[in-house]
Image 1 (cartoon, rainbow, N blue to C red):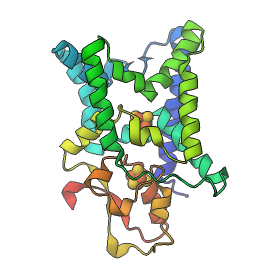
Image 2 (cartoon, protein in one colour):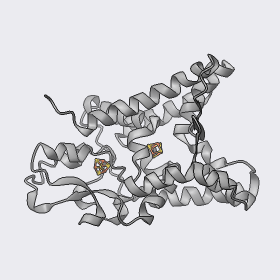
Image 3 (cartoon, rainbow, N blue to C red):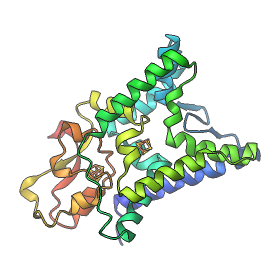
Image 4 (cartoon, rainbow, N blue to C red):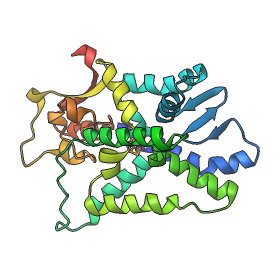
Amino acid sequence: MKRHSIQTYRRIIQIGVAVTFIILPLLNQLGFTFIWGNFLNIHIGPLNLTDPLAVLQITLKNQYFPPRLLMSTGIILIIAMCFGTIFCSWICPFGLLSELAHGLAKRILPDTFKKLNFQNSGFKIKIYILASGLLFLFLFCTTPVINQLSMPSWYSQIFQYLFIQKHISFAVLFVAAILFAEFISRNRLWCRYICPQSFLLVIAKLLNPFHLKVVYRKEKCISNKNNNPCQKACSLGLDPKTLNNLLETECNNCGDCVVACKKLGNALNFQFRHFL
Ligand code: SF4
Ligand code: SF4
């Protein structure tokens, strides 16, 4: 029997989540209330999950941390502490769209559209964006303003606006423009350099030195400079062989490089750091 790769399972879950958030507003209107909400705050039966970035802003602005939020956001952070930023690679619908745009660009754009070579660490840029957002929040706002840059949140709200309030949100244009820019540049610009949504997940991951990560075993590697399937497989443009601490902040444990490597020397694998 054919064994499916982690890529297959990942894609099924990504698509499942993306479709769920399309039909959820319709189901809610028909009386289904077991799951309701969006990527800012979702209720699944008795479980309530709240976006950590929104909680951070509410807490800092009001200088008060409602205990009920500890549970609702803590679950998300604990998962990131153990498994890294798998929210980005397995759950986020914008991540799925961004991956698809990137894959399409790789297939159909001519070679003249060479991939732009962005050298800077995306994480450093995100620090500036988050700091600016927090400053703006303190000076001018009372609501979690940084979430205006939350693509998963916009994705889910687009369908809430469409099916519940019966109008098309301008966010559609915003999302489409970003995807087009990523397509043309052949680079996952938003996820690597801008999205503040993943910032706290990265921090949570870094707080746990034993989190799940991609490990490279040089002695098993049989590729050469001209044949680097793991690097080619990474839609974020990372080189899994040289994931230092800074670049590792950007790896979302999607496993595409691990799958590509399995066909060769099996030099890349997921491991919890503890076992190294
Ligand atoms: S970086 Fe942001 S937009 Fe990209 S996959 Fe992660 S949460 Fe989604
Ligand atoms: S380095 Fe590997 S696991 Fe990390 S994002 Fe790139 S392909 Fe995915």
